[in-house]
Each structure stands twice: as C-alpha cells, then as structure tokens.
Image 1: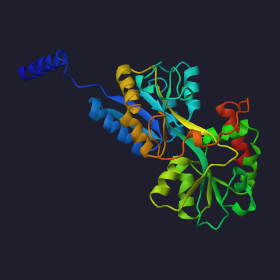
Image 2 (image 1 turned 45 degrees about the vertical axis):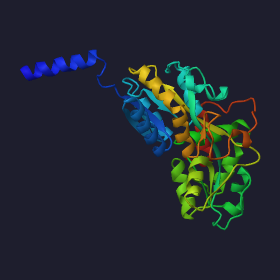
Image 3 (image 1 turned 60 degrees about the vertical axis):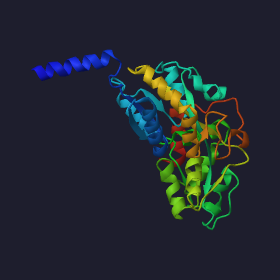
Length: 316
C-alpha cells in the first residue's frame, strides 16, 4: 500500500514539475517506409515525443481511416494524393494549421489545412535491357512494340497513379487506357508491384511510375531509366494533414513543423522526392524542369467516377 501511494505521489510530482512523459502521436502515411521511419526517429530524438507509425499504400491508409471513422486513431495523415486533402477539407475533417516552416513552400503546395511533405512526378520507367525501343510518350506504350510488356500501378491502390489517371482523363486522353488494355497491359497493385516485373526483366516498362521509386532503384545500380513525356505529366504532391479529431494537436503541429524543417526536408530529398521547400536541394529534376499536362479547365470527375472509368477500360 505504501509502495503504491509513494508511486502515485511520484507521478504527481513529476507531472507538476514538467517531467511527465510526452504523449505519443499516431501518424498514418503512404509512401516510402524508409522515409517514414527516419522522420519518426529523428522527430522523437529531437522532441522526446514518440510516434506510432502506420505506413502502407494510399489505398490501405484510406481503408483504415474509413474503418476507424467512429473512433479515429490517427493524429496526422500523409497521403500520396492531394485529392485526399481536398476531400477531407470539404468534409470538415481537418484542423487548420500553418507551420512557420512553410514560408518557402509554394502556395500551390499548401492550404489552410494541408501542406506538402514532398512532391513526386509520374513518368515511364523503362528497362533498357528489355529489347524494346526507348519510349518517349505515353502513347508509345500502347504500340505493338510493347504488347504484353507494360505494367501500371492500380490507381485504386496508388494515390500518385490516381493523380495521373485523373489528369489524363481531364485532358481528354482517356482513350489511352482503352488502348493499353487492348495491348495487354498489366494493372498490378501499388507502385512497387508494378515496378518489380520491369526490374526483373519480365516486363519492359511501367506506365505511370512514381518517379522517386524508380530513381532510387537506378541509384542502386538497377537497369531502369525514367522518362517524363514531353507532352506533359502530373505532379503528385504528398499532403500532410492534422485530423480535427486529434487529442494531441500541439504535438501533431510539432511533427508538421519538423518535417518542414531543414533536417526533415533533407530526409525527404534523400529518397528522391522533391522537397516541398524550394530552398532545400533536390537530388532529381524538380517541377520547374518538368512539363506538366496543360490545365484543361475541366475536371475528370469525382474519385469514384474516375476509378469507375478506369475499371471499365480494363474490364476489371
């Protein structure tokens, strides 16, 4: 009894003097596991705040959030598609926050309720040992030279692939998916599932490869080239959001601040993403060096409508 009482008094004393343990925060993130783990470890080392991390594909992150609607667990969500930030804001799910470290983040990569962690672009990942001609445009992968030799990430699983599919539909190029399907293109799972057969030589190219993964593979000596079509591509900003349901708002804000700090953005650059901050050096081509698909002035439709059109094209 005396031991229990003494322990209780000690806990109260520690709390009163400010030495109580920090509460954990929970971060759900799509994207590279190595980046998620590095950011979590560095943040904990700097602040003493532990991070409960769930890293998966965008599709799995969204499914988990949906399953937890009645009892939200995440404090911070990082998606591979800005569409998530827009939808969540429209539903009133996000806490407004502007980080002081976001001053050098361009306006189009931040809003009142979201800010980019980093940015990827979509391209063609091509194996030069595949015996196929080097493609230059999206349409090249629907030609006879690439029959049964193309993979593509599933936009239902990959947030970045969804951005490309939506962008091409919005620009009136939806027929590409009908042609790819007719040419025997394989819709794999998320990004790595589409890239692996190309790295192994079983397939020749990925249509809509998230470029940072392919660039990272090339840096380790893999036989892979990344081609950004001259007709244009889309960028996939990775929004960081604080859920309004969080019980740890101040610590969640500190996490956002850290990811946008010099150290955090340098970690982003290490995995061949473009840092969100323009004053942090990138290890790959940046937005200013890539041609983006022209803004058509029209929308492809809601996420559900875009995925339905894609599914219909591939007869899934």
